[in-house]
Amino acid sequence: MLYTDFIILILLLGLSFIIFGLGYLIANVFLKLDESAYEKVSSYECGFDAFADAREPFDIKFYLIAILFIIFDVEVLFFFPWALTLKDLFFHSFYYMILFMIILITGFAYEWKKGCMDWD
Image 1: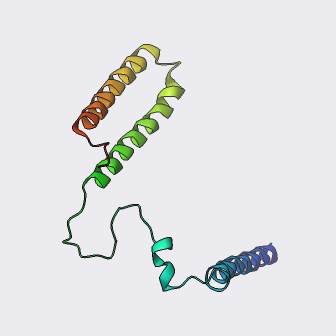
Image 2: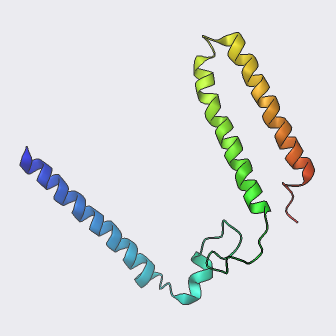
């Protein structure tokens, strides 16, 4: 049993080195990524350069959209246990979920009315 575990460990380590080596070869040898390709491969999710001065002004709408995403992501997480127990607790859980949805939709409508979803 010890020999099979050792063989599997060696195979996994070898496969890991092969995968990392192929990634290095593809990125540096075949694609020839250099300093001129920084803008092309840099992340752009936050809307501004991550290595800029911390005191630089930024647009708050990126964070508002991120908060909206988290809110609706949590809402979807609440749907799974509710859907699984709906048969057992129909009346109570159904009306509580309707109340939950009304609160979330009201908040979403408020943010939409305030213009948080508009990209100027």
